[in-house]
Image (cartoon, rainbow, N blue to C red; front, side):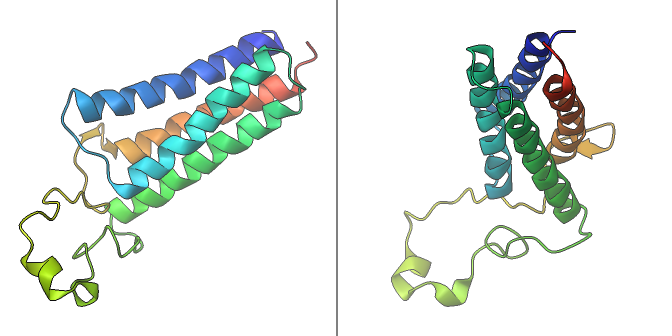
Length: 155
């Protein structure tokens, strides 16, 4: 395959993951947690980098695409580990959720406070034993291989 074909494939892979995430959110009704949102940004960066490379930007940007999917994959591994209780996650979205000691009395009594806090340590969907975070990590490894192949391709 040519470099551009590989970059296009990797770019479309990140786009498909983002579209899938938005589909689960807006069609499936599964609101994302904070860590889910963290995983989306590097895919967006990979899409922008892929588009730039396809439009003639320097080949070195393919390595940045590889870095972007490495970052999202690492966040996915971390998030999956939090879901499986292998290690602690951010206190703002795991365990008890909010730090009640940091809230004022009016915040605690407010009826307008958000009721749908999505916890990062709860698995809301899984397929073949992997959560969405786990699948993001697995697919990101595949995308990493494609980005590296693109960076090493001659033309």
